[in-house]
Amino acid sequence: MKTSNERAGFAPVTRCDPPVLCAERIYKRYGNTEVLKGISLTVERGDVLCLIGPSGSGKSTFLRCINQLETPDSGFIHVDGELVGYTRKGNRFYGLKPRAIARQREKTGMVFQNFNVFGHLTVLENLIKAPMLVQRKSRAEATETALALLKRVGLAEKVDAYPHLLSGGQQQRVAIARALAMKPSLMLFDEPTSALDPELVGEVLAVMRDLAAEGMTMIVVTHELRFAQEVATQVAFMDQGVIVEAGTPSEVLLHPKQARTQAFVART
Image 1 (cartoon, helix red, strand yellow):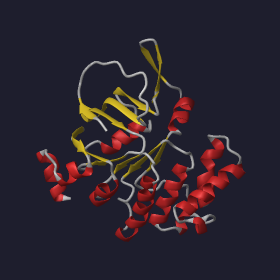
Image 2 (cartoon, rainbow, N blue to C red; image 1 turned 60 degrees about the horizontal axis):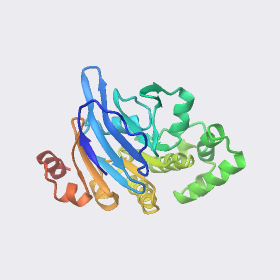
Image 3 (cartoon, rainbow, N blue to C red; image 1 turned 90 degrees about the horizontal axis):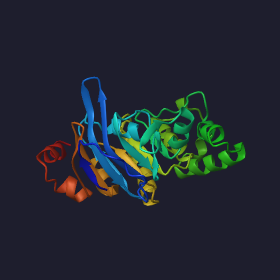
């Protein structure tokens, strides 16, 4: 992973391959508040990048920019070598239409803090809905994939249950399986355990550990520093919209160089 924080005019790279993610000088402002101040980084295939930092530092906003739930004010993002949100014609860039954005979004599975599973659908229906509607898979094919994923996250016996009958940890595992059902290149996790009771955190982290061990490329916004130390290949500490320090878990969590990183790690 390479990172930098810069403000300058530039032309984006035409491809970012083999990295799964390449973000170039991403800026985002809400009114007078600049939330992201030139974030640049790359994530290689199979990497697990943990983003840590205080609330309000821009971590979640950055994930939402990757998944096109937010549009950066400037900068470019490539996923699997494809420019996200725009098409380039000569030296000009044009925003994509919603259908094209939806197609691109298939490459990035996102798991939110509050599960966001569909309460009116069974667990199985939650997993097969998007593959059938978006990817035009047959019900039989989508169901076969869904059943394998539910077994993978330890919920094979909950296939016909509705979300309100599940614990928070089980609902979050359904959300992970649902994201995986689209077969994304990159998984994005936005504080996936923050809404869980402490005794349920471990079951969700265990699934994420398994995904990392299987080589899934992941970006995880988390306050679980022990998880980051055990699973991450890279850790980036964000504060006030910039990447203050980045490196291996040992470098950032055990031997941080920047005072702001040192203070955060010591408090957590």
